[in-house]
Every structure is written in structure tokens, then in C-alpha cells.
Image (cartoon, rainbow, N blue to C red; front, side, top):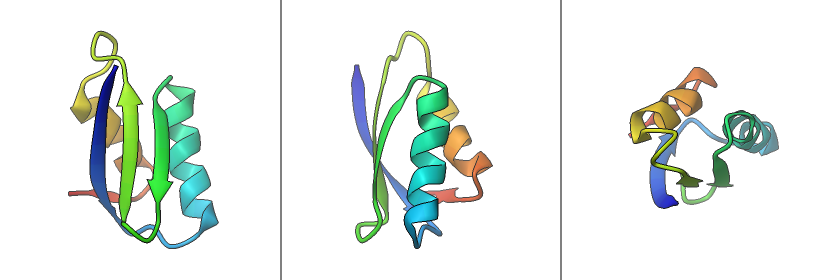
Length: 66
């Protein structure tokens, strides 16, 4: 498992947390949103996903991954 912290812009409330964590969970990636830190800690299997795919899932929810 690969663990990465991504800087994510545009998150402000519990809906944002649920949206991102839920979308990641749907594809089998563990995500933990930190609203104050404007970041998401993700844990994913490098054999199944690339970091770009993980970022794309977050961006599809309407957030910018730095």
C-alpha cells in the first residue's frame, strides 16, 4: 500500500469530506480528509491504481488537487 498526502483546494464543510471520502471508497482507495490542513491522506494499492487516477477521482468531485 502506498500512503500519500495530497493538497486539495476548495473543501469547506462536512459535505466536502463525505464527497471525497465516498468517491475514493467506491474505487477501493482509503481517504481521510483534513479540512483545516486542506489535505487528503490517501492509501492505495499501486498495483491497481496510479496516483494520477486517485487525483482524478478527487478532481471529478469538483476540487483542485495541487
